[in-house]
Length: 340
Image (cartoon, rainbow, N blue to C red; front, side, top):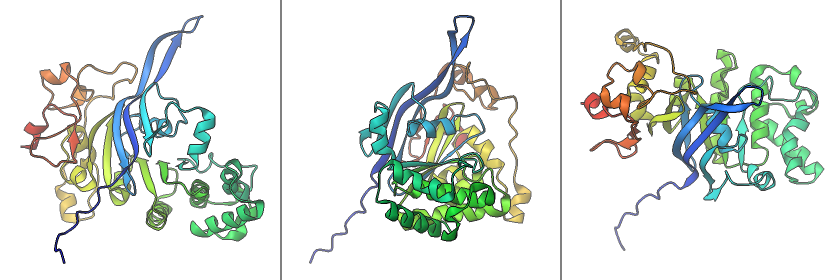
C-alpha cells in the first residue's frame, strides 16, 4: 500500500474580475457634451474562489459598491471582463443575465429601502422564485417558510409587511430573499452598516453560519474592519478606484504592506487593553482626490508620508514582493523599503 500523501485540491475560481473599469460621464452645456468622467472603478482585477469570503474594504467613495454592482451587471462596465464559473458576464444581454442571476445574488445595504413596503414578506422572498419560475405555487410557499426558518424568523410572519419588522429582522428578510434561488455567490454590500450595533453581530454570525451550512461564496463589501477580519478569508483594500493590497486576512491585518492599509489598520481598536494603550494611530493628512481627476502616478501619493519622485510619476502595479507571501500582493513602489 502506498504511503504517498495526496496534496489538497487547490480552490477553483468562481468569479474572475479582469481590468474592470466603471466610468460615469460628466456632461455639461446645452448639448450635454461629455467633458470628463468619474473613474469610480479604474482597472480592478481579482479572483473570488469557491467557498471563500473575500472582504473588500476602503473608505467611502473608493468604488467598493460600484465594483459589486458591476460584477452582477446591475451596472454596466465601461471596459474589462467578469467571468462566473468561466462564463463571461459583462457581454451578456439582459435575457441571458436572467438565467445567470439565480446563481449570483445581492444583499443590499439598507434594509429599510431595499424591501418593497407594499409587498408582504412572503411575496418579497418568493419573488425570485416566481421570476425564475422555480416550483409550483405550493412549493414556493413552502420554500418561503423554509427560508424564514433558516434566517431565524417565524414562518407565521409570511403575511406581514416590512414596516412591522425591526432593522435586523428586515435584513434577515433580505438575506432570505437572496438565498431563495440557492445561489452560489452573494455580494453583500455593507450588510450591517444601517443596523444598531447591538444586532450587527447577530447578522454577521447568521451569514457566517449560512456560508458553512450552504457552501456559499461571499464578496463582503464593508468599511467595518472588525467585521471583515471576523468573517473574511482574504481581504482586498481599495483606494480611489484601485486595489492597493490583496492577501489573506491575517497577512493584511497583521503585516500590512501599503501605507494606506497601515493607516486603516491603525484605526482598529484592540480588545487587549495592553495592546490598545500602545496602539499608534496613523493620521492621514489632506483629502481624498477627486475620482474625476485622480493624481498621476500612485493615487495615494498626495497623502503618503513616504512618497518619492517615482510615486508621483509612475503608477505602481499590484505585485508580490520578492521572497514574500505568494498570495499577498501590494501596489506600492516602496513596499520593500517599508517592509524592511
